Each structure stands twice: as C-alpha cells, then as structure tokens.
Image (cartoon, rainbow, N blue to C red; front, side, top):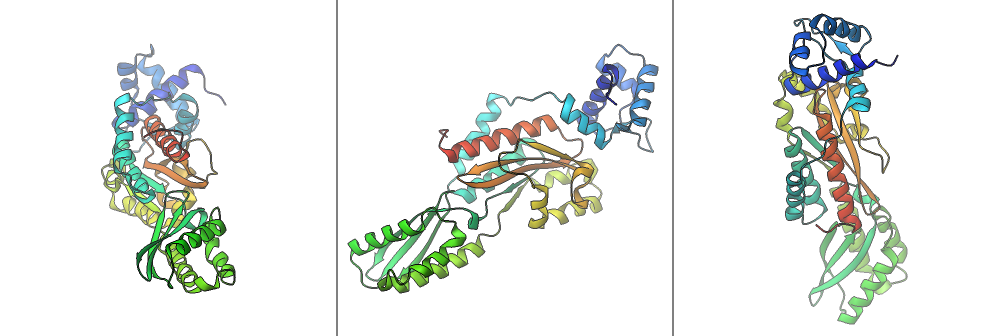
Length: 340
C-alpha cells in the first residue's frame, strides 16, 4: 500500500529527526520543529498508523517512535534527497588521496582512512586480489655481475621485485630476456604466470635458473598478497550510542575480522551503482543492527569494493555521496581519465 502525502511527510520527518538526534521522535517534536501544518493529535494518529503498517516502531521505554528497517528502506529509495559534497570537501578528499598514494596498497589504505574521516563511520575497502590482476611488464635490472632485480608490474599498479642470481649475461642478453618475459607474460592473470613460466623453460633453457627463481617468487607473492581488506575508523562504531553495549560491538567486529564474511557483504557485480543494505537485509547476523553503503571501483580490469558501515540511523545521503565520489575518483585515476 502506497503512503499518502501526509504519511510520507511524517515518515520523512521522523527518519531525519532520528538520524539527527538518535532519540525516539514524538508527535510534539514533529509539530514544533517541522511545521507540517498538522495538530499533535493528527500527527500522533498518523504515526500510530505508520507503526501499524510497519514503517515505525515504538521502543518500550519511550512515547516516541523510531523508523523500522522498512521505514528506512522507503526513505532511502523514495524520500531521501541527494546530497552534493561541497567544493572544500571534494578538494580535501582529492588532496588526501593524491598526496599520499605511492602504490595500490597505499591507495587502498588511504581510501579507508579518508572515507572514515569524511563520514565519521567505519569504512571498509576491499582491494582486488593479486591473482585476478594482469601482468603488465617484467624487467631485469642488473645490480652486480651475477645479480639482478626482477621487477613485475601489474595493470593495477602493484610492483613486485626480488633480487636473484643470474648466469653470466650481457646487458643485451638481459634486455632480450626482459622482452621475452614481457611478451609471454603481459596480459596474463598473475595466477597463471607460474604455469606459463614452467612451459617456457624449454624455450629459454639457458635462463632456467632465473625462470625457477621467478616461479618461486611469484608463488610466494600471490600468497603474501592475499590480505586485501582495509578498515578505517573502527573507533567510530564504538562512539555510536547503539554500540556502547560491548556485546553488540563485539558481534560487529567478529564479522569484520573474517575477510570471507566481509566478501558476502559486498556481493555486488562490477559497475553496480552505490547501494544500501539496511538492518535485516544484511546477510550476516553480527551486523543486522547496522546499515552498509557499498560501491565498486575499477583498477584496470580488476575490481575493488568500498563501503561505509554504521548504525541504521546513519546519514545515508552523505554516506552515499562520499562513496560515489571516491569510487569515481579512484576509477578515473586508474583509467587515465582524470588528472590528480
């Protein structure tokens, strides 16, 4: 059943007042502060109807009401006005990211910090898995008569390097071997490189020792880079009245400690618009008192994910605006469409 104009206005008022104060909202507050042109009795009756319809709930200890998950959902989908970040805010975000980013890991870490500071909620950033990104180039750089630095660059900006022993080689041999490696490995997924190197051994037998070292190096690098979840503003959760109960806070952090569990919260395809999970919509029990604003960003062909986790009474409009701006900036930066 669709809400009429009066119930819609009252629902929006209750949601926004509860987001602002964290307190149950009574009919007198609605009349006094929002000037809807209705009497307290009328507002009280309409709020009772909204409760019966499942959009509001009444805490046992209060005469006021708060939004239900269903009420928040209607607000986010139909009533929430889009928030535009100020020029000062967008400039600050851009400056924070561009001035501190040296590689993909620092980008992800700084994104988590910046988003948490901008929203005052907990931020989650899932970087792309190294094994799903593609190799861009391989270079050998001489550092001694029989020592070289192998440098592997991926399309997302990861740089892996290792000092290795090499057979006697001229500079021309090293350049030629680098070209052979790049020709055979560029564009392939990192997870496929050890297998491709194994098949190359017969083709470049004189470099067999280097090939073996490179295979071992890549196998270890893929394992070491498995950790890809970065969080910012963990204390922001504890500052919310809803999570001052240590049991509730513990339930949230028990979910966040498990990267596989966090992956379930971000089960969204590439290119999806920013979306919101509210309360019981979350697939994991420990965060059913939370809401999650989530989006995706591109690093070359690889996919990263970004989210803001907070109480159900979070400032959805602002959180959505920040996630949308940051994901666009990261994707533009790595797509070469924007100059930071």
